Image (cartoon, rainbow, N blue to C red; front, side, top):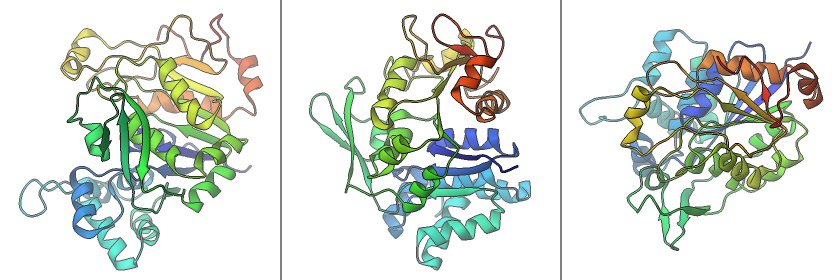
Length: 337
């Protein structure tokens, strides 16, 4: 029996969470990764060497690595002082690979061999781009890190995203989408990790034409400056504006306790909720949150939810096998869990 081809689209820690969840689950995994990061170690390396951003690629390579845990730990290591302060070893390695091999594509191949990566990590574009966001007041913010950590008034809504220059999608990314059985979008910062992928020419059209099952994993928390007071409906509608209808959306149902939420109060970050009047035939309500510490997707819970969908032959199969609610939502597990 052929493995199902699963393509995950995103950036940041969100792609890492999904890849880690589905690793060793008997599927053929590929990650299409945003290339707009320009902050921290990645930003310094872009400025100093003119290379493509390695940070999100590094995370995906580590997620799919089957190498010894000590080697994976080494690629995560971040220098705390000296000339390399703030840099991760993995970023430096990828930059050295790109300069040695002549291009970023070959750099990823080399790193994949070293880390014994099981799957593919694909940059969404091979063009050096800067992410820009136009605010409601007409001002334009340039740079992913300036959108991610706003120096402007965070209450100003981002009404349009674009890149300078405009860029075409990596042909390898388009090929992966065309042959995918399942496409998974998110989770991740909507304006800086998810939507930037859909700004690449050809990518939204490829997703829209794809016959793959399209799954969106909704964020657990809002992000001040990007998704102020967003509900699940806002996230879903914005993603569908770019790529068309989604077949399934996984939305967390478990509310974090007050103690955990207190840590997010200063950041004006609140839990993503589902409006009582929101209807979507593919909405799946499930507890996919960790039980302590930072509010994150639990890898095991998320894997269980995703694999139930991936294993299905069609959306109709899900409808027949899981209880549907009046809201149109489907519970994968006990909703009170």
